[in-house]
Image (cartoon, rainbow, N blue to C red):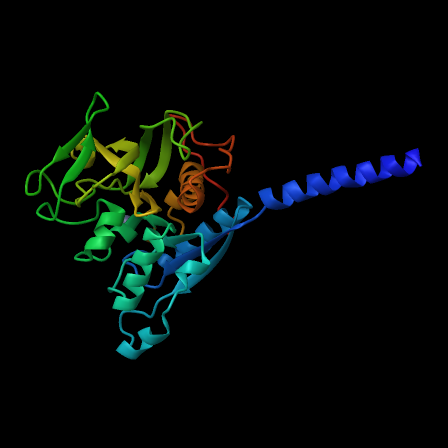
Length: 303
Ligand code: ZN
Protein backbone atom coordinates (compact mmCIF):
# COMPACT_ATOMS: atom_id res chain seq x y z
CA UNK A 1 0.00 0.00 0.00
CA UNK A 2 2.70 2.38 1.01
CA UNK A 3 4.61 1.56 -2.13
CA UNK A 4 1.48 2.13 -4.19
CA UNK A 5 0.89 5.50 -2.56
CA UNK A 6 4.50 6.47 -3.15
CA UNK A 7 4.09 5.51 -6.80
CA UNK A 8 0.95 7.64 -7.11
CA UNK A 9 2.85 10.49 -5.51
CA UNK A 10 5.67 10.10 -7.99
CA UNK A 11 3.28 10.00 -10.95
CA UNK A 12 1.51 13.13 -9.67
CA UNK A 13 4.85 14.87 -9.27
CA UNK A 14 5.86 14.05 -12.83
CA UNK A 15 2.46 15.14 -14.14
CA UNK A 16 2.93 18.54 -12.50
CA UNK A 17 6.45 18.84 -13.86
CA UNK A 18 5.39 17.81 -17.36
CA UNK A 19 2.37 20.08 -17.27
CA UNK A 20 4.58 22.98 -16.30
CA UNK A 21 7.21 22.35 -18.94
CA UNK A 22 4.52 21.92 -21.60
CA UNK A 23 3.14 25.39 -20.92
CA UNK A 24 6.61 26.98 -20.72
CA UNK A 25 7.41 25.42 -24.07
CA UNK A 26 4.25 26.78 -25.68
CA UNK A 27 5.37 28.43 -28.86
CA UNK A 28 4.43 31.86 -30.05
CA UNK A 29 3.02 32.05 -33.53
CA UNK A 30 4.79 34.51 -35.81
CA UNK A 31 3.95 35.67 -39.31
CA UNK A 32 6.75 37.23 -41.40
CA UNK A 33 5.58 39.38 -44.28
CA UNK A 34 7.86 39.87 -47.29
CA UNK A 35 7.55 39.99 -51.07
CA UNK A 36 8.68 43.51 -51.98
CA UNK A 37 11.71 45.36 -50.73
CA UNK A 38 14.56 47.51 -52.01
CA UNK A 39 16.65 44.93 -50.12
CA UNK A 40 17.32 41.29 -50.84
CA UNK A 41 14.32 39.97 -48.90
CA UNK A 42 14.84 36.48 -50.32
CA UNK A 43 18.24 36.38 -48.57
CA UNK A 44 16.81 37.87 -45.37
CA UNK A 45 13.65 35.97 -44.51
CA UNK A 46 15.01 32.37 -44.39
CA UNK A 47 17.95 33.08 -42.03
CA UNK A 48 15.82 35.36 -39.82
CA UNK A 49 13.13 32.65 -39.67
CA UNK A 50 15.75 30.02 -38.81
CA UNK A 51 17.32 32.17 -36.08
CA UNK A 52 13.90 32.85 -34.55
CA UNK A 53 12.89 29.18 -34.65
CA UNK A 54 16.26 28.20 -33.18
CA UNK A 55 15.28 30.00 -29.95
CA UNK A 56 12.59 27.35 -29.49
CA UNK A 57 10.07 30.09 -28.73
CA UNK A 58 8.44 30.61 -32.15
CA UNK A 59 6.73 28.81 -34.97
CA UNK A 60 7.06 30.99 -38.04
CA UNK A 61 4.90 31.25 -41.15
CA UNK A 62 5.72 33.51 -44.09
CA UNK A 63 3.23 35.48 -46.18
CA UNK A 64 4.70 36.76 -49.44
CA UNK A 65 2.89 39.55 -51.27
CA UNK A 66 2.53 39.74 -55.04
CA UNK A 67 5.46 41.50 -56.71
CA UNK A 68 5.15 45.13 -57.79
CA UNK A 69 4.44 44.22 -61.42
CA UNK A 70 1.65 41.80 -60.62
CA UNK A 71 -1.79 42.66 -62.01
CA UNK A 72 -4.11 44.32 -59.52
CA UNK A 73 -6.21 41.16 -59.16
CA UNK A 74 -3.17 39.29 -57.81
CA UNK A 75 -3.70 41.10 -54.50
CA UNK A 76 -7.16 39.54 -54.03
CA UNK A 77 -5.60 36.44 -52.51
CA UNK A 78 -3.31 38.40 -50.17
CA UNK A 79 -5.32 38.13 -46.98
CA UNK A 80 -2.97 37.40 -44.08
CA UNK A 81 -4.91 36.21 -41.05
CA UNK A 82 -3.14 38.42 -38.54
CA UNK A 83 -5.39 37.32 -35.68
CA UNK A 84 -4.04 33.76 -35.90
CA UNK A 85 -0.63 35.09 -34.77
CA UNK A 86 0.94 36.44 -31.61
CA UNK A 87 3.32 38.64 -33.55
CA UNK A 88 3.76 39.89 -37.11
CA UNK A 89 7.26 40.72 -38.36
CA UNK A 90 7.56 42.99 -41.37
CA UNK A 91 10.40 42.47 -43.82
CA UNK A 92 8.39 44.41 -46.41
CA UNK A 93 9.06 47.70 -48.17
CA UNK A 94 6.91 48.11 -51.24
CA UNK A 95 3.51 49.03 -52.58
CA UNK A 96 0.68 50.00 -50.24
CA UNK A 97 -1.48 47.03 -49.30
CA UNK A 98 -5.16 46.83 -50.18
CA UNK A 99 -7.21 48.93 -47.79
CA UNK A 100 -8.78 45.86 -46.14
CA UNK A 101 -5.30 44.48 -45.27
CA UNK A 102 -4.06 47.79 -43.87
CA UNK A 103 -7.23 48.12 -41.76
CA UNK A 104 -6.82 44.52 -40.58
CA UNK A 105 -3.26 45.24 -39.37
CA UNK A 106 -4.43 48.38 -37.54
CA UNK A 107 -7.17 46.40 -35.80
CA UNK A 108 -4.88 43.49 -35.02
CA UNK A 109 -2.25 45.66 -33.31
CA UNK A 110 -4.72 47.96 -31.55
CA UNK A 111 -6.48 44.86 -30.15
CA UNK A 112 -3.23 43.65 -28.59
CA UNK A 113 -1.24 42.05 -31.42
CA UNK A 114 2.53 42.37 -31.62
CA UNK A 115 4.41 43.96 -34.51
CA UNK A 116 8.14 43.87 -35.26
CA UNK A 117 9.65 46.19 -37.86
CA UNK A 118 13.02 45.33 -39.39
CA UNK A 119 15.28 47.80 -41.23
CA UNK A 120 13.62 49.03 -44.47
CA UNK A 121 10.17 47.99 -43.26
CA UNK A 122 10.24 51.47 -41.70
CA UNK A 123 10.71 52.95 -45.20
CA UNK A 124 7.34 51.60 -46.27
CA UNK A 125 3.90 53.12 -46.43
CA UNK A 126 4.56 56.88 -46.33
CA UNK A 127 1.16 58.54 -46.00
CA UNK A 128 -0.44 55.69 -44.01
CA UNK A 129 -0.84 57.71 -40.83
CA UNK A 130 -1.69 54.78 -38.53
CA UNK A 131 1.43 52.93 -39.71
CA UNK A 132 3.47 56.07 -38.99
CA UNK A 133 2.08 56.01 -35.45
CA UNK A 134 3.06 52.34 -35.07
CA UNK A 135 6.63 52.79 -36.32
CA UNK A 136 7.15 56.22 -34.75
CA UNK A 137 9.98 57.16 -37.09
CA UNK A 138 10.34 56.22 -40.74
CA UNK A 139 12.65 56.80 -43.66
CA UNK A 140 11.13 60.15 -44.68
CA UNK A 141 12.32 63.66 -45.56
CA UNK A 142 12.73 66.30 -42.90
CA UNK A 143 9.36 67.93 -43.59
CA UNK A 144 7.51 64.72 -42.73
CA UNK A 145 7.76 64.85 -38.96
CA UNK A 146 9.96 65.22 -35.92
CA UNK A 147 13.40 63.77 -35.50
CA UNK A 148 14.48 62.08 -32.26
CA UNK A 149 18.08 61.67 -31.11
CA UNK A 150 19.95 61.23 -27.82
CA UNK A 151 22.57 63.76 -26.68
CA UNK A 152 25.90 63.14 -24.94
CA UNK A 153 24.20 63.17 -21.52
CA UNK A 154 21.69 60.52 -22.56
CA UNK A 155 18.86 63.05 -22.88
CA UNK A 156 16.29 62.58 -25.64
CA UNK A 157 16.31 65.51 -28.09
CA UNK A 158 13.39 66.23 -30.42
CA UNK A 159 14.05 68.29 -33.55
CA UNK A 160 10.99 69.90 -35.16
CA UNK A 161 9.71 69.14 -38.62
CA UNK A 162 11.68 71.02 -41.30
CA UNK A 163 14.82 71.49 -39.18
CA UNK A 164 17.92 69.34 -39.46
CA UNK A 165 18.55 66.35 -41.68
CA UNK A 166 16.02 63.92 -43.11
CA UNK A 167 16.55 60.21 -43.54
CA UNK A 168 19.92 58.95 -44.73
CA UNK A 169 22.96 56.86 -43.96
CA UNK A 170 26.68 56.92 -44.69
CA UNK A 171 28.80 54.04 -45.96
CA UNK A 172 28.26 50.72 -44.20
CA UNK A 173 30.52 49.95 -41.27
CA UNK A 174 30.60 48.04 -38.00
CA UNK A 175 29.38 50.28 -35.18
CA UNK A 176 28.83 50.23 -31.46
CA UNK A 177 25.28 49.80 -30.18
CA UNK A 178 24.65 51.56 -26.85
CA UNK A 179 21.85 50.30 -24.61
CA UNK A 180 19.80 53.24 -23.31
CA UNK A 181 17.40 51.35 -21.06
CA UNK A 182 19.04 48.50 -19.15
CA UNK A 183 15.79 47.70 -17.29
CA UNK A 184 13.48 47.09 -20.25
CA UNK A 185 12.67 43.37 -20.67
CA UNK A 186 14.18 43.33 -24.19
CA UNK A 187 17.57 44.80 -23.25
CA UNK A 188 17.86 43.77 -19.59
CA UNK A 189 21.10 41.85 -19.06
CA UNK A 190 22.77 43.02 -22.28
CA UNK A 191 26.19 44.63 -22.02
CA UNK A 192 25.98 48.44 -22.10
CA UNK A 193 27.82 48.56 -25.44
CA UNK A 194 28.41 45.95 -28.10
CA UNK A 195 29.85 46.00 -31.59
CA UNK A 196 27.29 45.43 -34.34
CA UNK A 197 28.48 43.83 -37.60
CA UNK A 198 28.85 45.96 -40.73
CA UNK A 199 25.51 47.60 -41.45
CA UNK A 200 23.87 50.83 -42.53
CA UNK A 201 23.56 53.30 -39.69
CA UNK A 202 20.20 54.99 -40.24
CA UNK A 203 20.00 58.66 -39.30
CA UNK A 204 17.52 61.51 -39.52
CA UNK A 205 14.45 59.28 -39.36
CA UNK A 206 11.19 61.23 -39.20
CA UNK A 207 7.67 60.74 -37.95
CA UNK A 208 5.15 61.44 -35.20
CA UNK A 209 7.35 59.57 -32.66
CA UNK A 210 4.50 59.56 -30.12
CA UNK A 211 5.10 57.48 -26.97
CA UNK A 212 8.40 56.34 -28.49
CA UNK A 213 10.76 54.70 -26.00
CA UNK A 214 14.37 54.33 -27.18
CA UNK A 215 16.16 51.14 -26.11
CA UNK A 216 19.43 51.51 -28.04
CA UNK A 217 21.33 54.08 -30.09
CA UNK A 218 24.47 54.26 -32.23
CA UNK A 219 26.77 57.23 -32.76
CA UNK A 220 26.64 58.41 -36.39
CA UNK A 221 30.24 59.61 -36.79
CA UNK A 222 30.83 62.62 -39.06
CA UNK A 223 33.79 60.86 -40.70
CA UNK A 224 31.31 58.18 -41.80
CA UNK A 225 29.03 60.89 -43.26
CA UNK A 226 26.95 60.75 -40.12
CA UNK A 227 25.07 63.42 -38.20
CA UNK A 228 27.54 63.55 -35.30
CA UNK A 229 24.97 62.45 -32.76
CA UNK A 230 23.37 59.33 -31.25
CA UNK A 231 20.72 57.96 -33.58
CA UNK A 232 18.00 55.57 -32.35
CA UNK A 233 18.62 51.97 -33.43
CA UNK A 234 15.94 50.17 -31.41
CA UNK A 235 12.70 51.49 -29.94
CA UNK A 236 9.26 50.42 -28.79
CA UNK A 237 5.86 52.07 -29.07
CA UNK A 238 2.45 51.12 -27.67
CA UNK A 239 -0.39 51.15 -30.20
CA UNK A 240 -3.79 50.67 -28.59
CA UNK A 241 -3.45 47.46 -26.59
CA UNK A 242 -0.61 46.29 -28.86
CA UNK A 243 3.14 46.68 -28.80
CA UNK A 244 5.49 47.59 -31.65
CA UNK A 245 9.22 46.81 -31.70
CA UNK A 246 11.40 48.51 -34.31
CA UNK A 247 15.04 48.11 -35.23
CA UNK A 248 16.51 49.99 -38.15
CA UNK A 249 19.47 47.61 -38.24
CA UNK A 250 19.56 44.61 -40.56
CA UNK A 251 20.60 45.78 -44.04
CA UNK A 252 20.98 42.98 -46.57
CA UNK A 253 21.71 44.13 -50.10
CA UNK A 254 23.60 41.14 -51.42
CA UNK A 255 24.27 37.57 -50.49
CA UNK A 256 26.33 37.20 -47.31
CA UNK A 257 25.88 40.71 -45.87
CA UNK A 258 26.69 40.15 -42.20
CA UNK A 259 24.25 42.46 -40.35
CA UNK A 260 21.54 39.85 -39.76
CA UNK A 261 24.13 37.29 -38.65
CA UNK A 262 25.21 39.54 -35.76
CA UNK A 263 24.40 37.65 -32.56
CA UNK A 264 23.38 40.96 -30.97
CA UNK A 265 20.94 41.72 -33.79
CA UNK A 266 19.46 38.21 -33.70
CA UNK A 267 19.06 38.42 -29.92
CA UNK A 268 17.37 41.82 -30.12
CA UNK A 269 14.94 40.68 -32.81
CA UNK A 270 14.01 37.47 -30.97
CA UNK A 271 13.56 39.21 -27.62
CA UNK A 272 11.84 42.19 -29.25
CA UNK A 273 9.39 39.92 -31.06
CA UNK A 274 8.69 37.93 -27.89
CA UNK A 275 8.05 41.14 -25.98
CA UNK A 276 5.81 42.48 -28.75
CA UNK A 277 3.83 39.24 -28.54
CA UNK A 278 3.55 38.90 -24.76
CA UNK A 279 4.95 41.94 -22.96
CA UNK A 280 7.53 39.65 -21.34
CA UNK A 281 10.87 38.17 -22.36
CA UNK A 282 12.08 34.65 -21.55
CA UNK A 283 14.59 34.14 -24.39
CA UNK A 284 18.05 34.26 -22.80
CA UNK A 285 20.95 36.46 -23.85
CA UNK A 286 23.57 34.12 -25.34
CA UNK A 287 27.13 33.95 -24.04
CA UNK A 288 28.57 34.86 -27.43
CA UNK A 289 27.00 38.31 -27.68
CA UNK A 290 29.43 40.82 -29.26
CA UNK A 291 31.67 42.72 -26.83
CA UNK A 292 32.28 46.47 -26.95
CA UNK A 293 35.14 45.93 -29.41
CA UNK A 294 34.44 42.67 -31.15
CA UNK A 295 31.76 41.65 -33.61
CA UNK A 296 30.16 38.22 -33.06
CA UNK A 297 28.54 36.43 -35.99
CA UNK A 298 26.30 33.37 -35.97
CA UNK A 299 27.55 30.69 -38.40
CA UNK A 300 26.49 31.45 -41.98
CA UNK A 301 25.15 27.94 -42.47
CA UNK A 302 22.64 28.45 -39.66
CA UNK A 303 19.86 28.92 -42.20
ZN1 ZN B 1 19.44 49.03 -46.18
